Image (cartoon, rainbow, N blue to C red):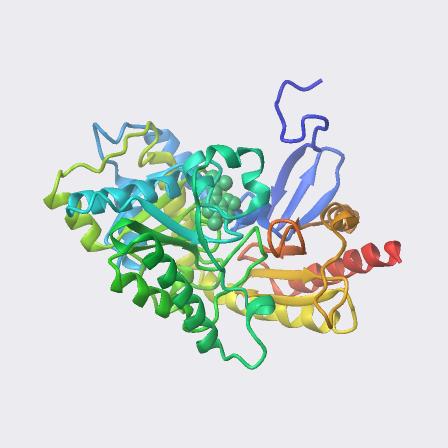
Length: 442
Ligand code: PLP
C-alpha cells in the first residue's frame, strides 16, 4: 500500500530506480529510451556526471539562503548567462516551477501597468488550446478544456483567440503571411472589443507543446502579433516553459520568430530536471517602470533564487553551450523529423509530423486525406503508451489536440545528447508502436 497520493488514485505507477544518458531503468530491470525527457525536461539525459558533480559542490558550500536577506553567486551568474543570450531581456528572477513563474509573469505585467499609471489594464488575452500552468491564475488563462475541467467555474471570464495551427486552420491558398496577419487581426479585434485601456498582456507559447503537440508558429506570425500589442500598449508574454532552453535548437525558441517579448518564462529544461527551477526574464522597460515606481517587485516566496537550483541550472546551461549541444539539437532534430516522415509515408493514420529541433509532434488521424480525427473513444494515448513501453520507449502521447476534446498526437523530445544511432533506434521503436496500435485496432 502506498501513502503517496498519485494522480490516478486507483493505480500506482511503476518505480524508476535509475538512469544513464538517454536511458531510464525501472525496478524490474527494464530499460527504456527516454524519448520525451519525462514531460520535456531531462534535456541532458540522466545522471550527467558534470551536473551531478556541480550539485555536490554547491550542496557542500551553500544549499539555501533567503533572497530577501542575501543574493548568491549561482543566481547572479545564471541571470547573467540567461540575459546575455536573450532577445533583449535584462533581468531574471528564479522560482521553482513553470506554473508559479507564469503566474508571476501575469502579476508583473499587471504591476508594470500599475507603475505606469494604467491600473485599469487587468485583462489577459491568451489562445484557445493553450496551457500555462495548474494554479488558478494560470489555469484561468489556459484555453485547454481538458485541463480546466472541473475548475472552470472558479476561473472567471477568459479571453481567447485562435492559436497558430497551420495544419488544420490555415486556409486553402492562404500564404503563411496572410494566415499570420489574419490571426493578428483577430487579436486586435479582441483588444478593441475589451477596450485597449483594459488589456494587460497577450500570453502565448512560442511553440505550443503538450496540448497540441509541438506546433510552431508560421513565419511572420509573432512579428504581426508584436505590432498589434505595440499599437495598443499591450505587453507580450511568451511562455517558453516547455519550448525554451535549447529544445528547439535555440536558447530561446523565439530567436527564430523575429520577436522580442516584454516578459518571458522558462522552466523544465532550465536545470534539465536535476533541480526544480524556473525563470522569468523581463525587458528593460518593465524593469525600469518598477525601479522608477514603487521600487519593489511585488512577489515574495520562500525559494526565490535558490542557490542549489541556480548552481545546477548554471551547470546545465554551461554544458549546453560548451558542448555545442544546440547544434546537435538542430541536426538530430532534422534527422528525427526526416526519418519519421519517411517511415510514416505509407501509414494512413499519421497526418502530420512537425516541430522544431528536438521538439517534435506527430498528429494521428482517422483519415489522412480529410484530417478526420480518431474517434474520441479510441483511447489512442493509452494504447500508444503501452505499445511504446513494450518497445522500450518513453513517449508523451495526448488526446484533445484540436480543441481539448478531439484529436490525438505524440510528443517526441529526446535528450540533447542523443546520437544519430539513438535517433534511428527511437524511430524504429516508435514506428513499431504506432503500427501495432493501428494493426490491433483493424
Ligand atoms: N507553461 C507551459 C507551456 C507548460 O508546458 C507547462 C507544463 O507543462 C507549464 C507552463 C506549467 O509548468 P509546471 O508543470 O512546471 O508547473
